[in-house]
Amino acid sequence: MKICVPTMGNSGLDEAICQHFGRAPTFTVVDLNDNEICVLPNVSEHMGGTGLPTETIFAEGVQVLIVGGLGPKAVMAFSEAGIDVFVGATGTVKDAIDDWREDVLSRASPDNACQDHKH
Image (cartoon, rainbow, N blue to C red; front, side, top):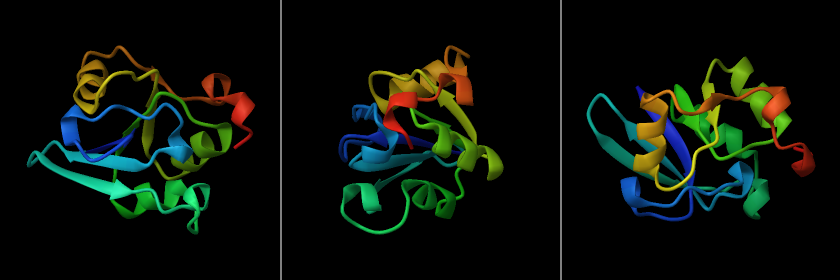
């Protein structure tokens, strides 16, 4: 199973979570089956590139996205792609995965999406 967490940099499991999904400098992907960690740069239009940040996640075959928060358009895009999204993550990637495993995080929905970002 591949889990993705939007992050501030390249420190793998010890990296801080970026609280704004679309503006995360990196996305840390953890493959729980083989413990591989891959850090992807956010090259979307939100960061001066092209495309949407959701497209980066789709291309990696991620099954679970763990975030601090994200906008309603992203919630819908991930839902339509069959990717489970959980909100409320804080701390590091390791903290987020631990909280997800302990069922501490909330499943993303239009009701708990970041409305002020207008995604």
